[in-house]
Image 1 (cartoon, rainbow, N blue to C red):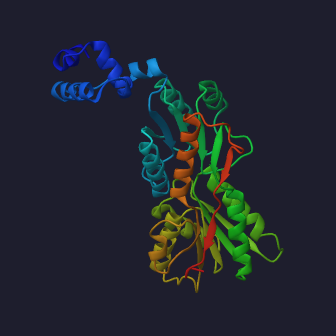
Image 2: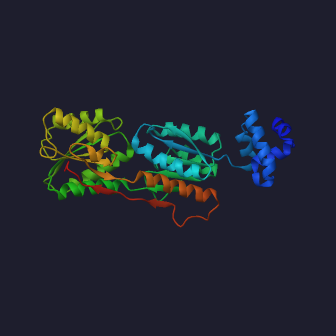
Length: 325
């Protein structure tokens, strides 16, 4: 700042004042300082500024996967909204384990972010303790609970599973299979589907837990497992559209027709779902809206808005019926 001041013909104090609050210096002086900054390549020390102003302008965002389009589209909408309000995103991938998430939370909090975005409502006790102790706004996505850390934006995974189960029963299916990734929320959807579909005595459900991420490969493996367990016809409920896509590929390889020999329900309504052959029946969640709602909730808190009437924002979901059922 001393060098910038010399080039601009002003004091170091004036440079500091201009960087922290441009309204405190004249436009002419500000232009001189900006020219000097360009000439020197000076980058203001954000950490020092944060210590002085208690604002880092950084928002921590923790997601299970940075390659899964389900999270990518949500984070994109969230980031665009936050950038429009002058904030930047510090993004980390946590996987689906609570211990890894806890480590990421500890690391991010050490950087003094202004707020934190988390995926899911289940965290280790220590992680929750750290978040509450940080005293900053926190938003949890993809789920809802009556006891969030601060604010949650999402939907009921249990209700989503029930919707799929009721839909399958109403379509007249009496046999079902489930293919589920190793995600706590996916497991809740599966359990709700089973309890709803399997309520009548004349129905049955065959289960294939693939024990890994939602992928095409695991979808193919899931269908092979169901067939080996004796699935013959009926409907399969998948915990993601990616698994359903794998099932379509495996079914085609085996000469099975969808929906004539096997009906299929996905989850997520990813972009490709409507363009598969056949087009995939799936449960749609508005991921972009989720990201925007989360950003707006954080911005309101960061701007000093009063406590919201509710710390729970339920964006809901809908079942999109297509040719696979």
